[in-house]
Image (cartoon, rainbow, N blue to C red):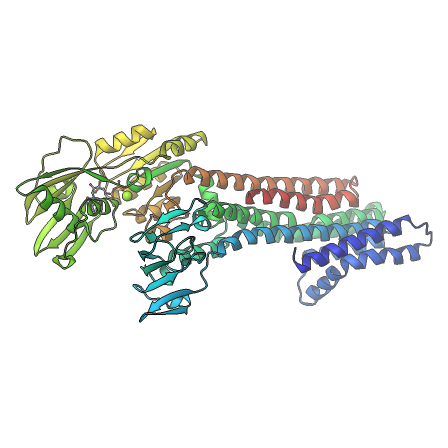
Length: 609
Ligand code: ADP
Ligand code: MG
């Protein structure tokens, strides 16, 4: 609890004791009784009255302080001393609740902020210098001791260690790392001293991107949220106006001014839209914060709302449903040795970040002179073109070969074929195979259990392989041999057909698709930076089980937000009706206001778990 919250709690307790004491005193004199009731009232309500006065002087009417002041002073005027104090008291209880809840959801986000590195120890001319992470350039060497946060993304050049990435991924198992492995900023170095060669400046690092994303999460409002804010703007003046009419018009005809004034005051107490105005954004904030603890970053409430509403889940294949860790199973050269073909492929692929390229370079660990590779062009969804030793080399699928006038024979073994051609001459092919991610079948099944009828796989790979993966995972629709642009068209077709597609990809070749889908999910750590920027939801690790987990959180959050809206509005409507008819008293009004607010906040806090 903060100091302000403690102060409020003390005031509430003191006022409660005073209220009970005063109620027990057998005092008949009404003036003296009023004076005594003022004690607890001012103890707990002075701030509210004072704020109301200040706001009125600034021309700010109809805020909650004003409404509470008018309602309680009105109750005093009617001689309902105890009710007047109780309204103020419970209003403060509601305020306390609210600030505790907001504080809690802030802390959830703040826990994530802990990943921000304060400084970096950089090696410059043999000496260690402690600088802020922003001052480290690409390619510098930073020294990270056990227990320290990794300040920038990079590759280990010396030292072995274990890394704790729990703050980023929610995965608490430490990861063993050795020279050559990548480490990600924001994770914690656990056991060994390491030297890391930086790969990006701080502003482009993972930690900066995540913090940016989280800090901006609350600015993207959900439709439900904007609706509530707009609604509150009209609701309060309308109810206050109705209260005024109720106090003035009926007495002109039927008399009984005090009775009607009492009804009008009840209106004022329920006119405060606090429960709605607080609990709906709080639900979203809680949901986003709770998800971030599990390594699921949702960029805003709007994205959360869309994720909850998505009815068709579309997946990229390579790197998303499959591991993207291809193994070269076959080397089939034409007119050269296997060694030469593998070397040629590795050189051609050496500058690409595509999972295929990385697997091919891994299969040929021999060093080669990088100067020999000149131009490099990626043909998305097809392959690579590079100039090696002055000769033009193509490496890619059959479509790429056909484009340069070669029709290669399909290898008889199963797998994805990478064909190679040099200076228009066919050189043979490599066959590579990929594995389905271990948790993919469970993730797809979980989505189906969540009521998702339609799952779609989009891939640039051959139809046979696509069919094999699709069948293994029980995906309902398979579309193969697509260019990146075809994938965008496929999403557009789904949207035109009335579906609300959510697209999940690893960000390699699919940033345009991520941008086009209603809601897009990027597999984080392995995904490209472009994906993290284009996607609405980022899974920090590359586990597919994050997709159903994110959907569950989004739906739960939406359910809670909706419950709060319906609950608060119906209770208020009921009380307004009862008050008009003369069946409600101040106590019921207090419940309708504070009770509903507290219940709604408690309900909203369920999203944080
Ligand atoms: P997916 O849709 O499964 O994610 P991509 O669109 O990235 O796959 O690639 C589609 C196909 O294009 C691959 O199956 C492969 O045949 C070919 N291809 C793409 N990039 C490369 C590359 N760097 N080297 C060789 N072939 C590639
Ligand atoms: Mg891909």
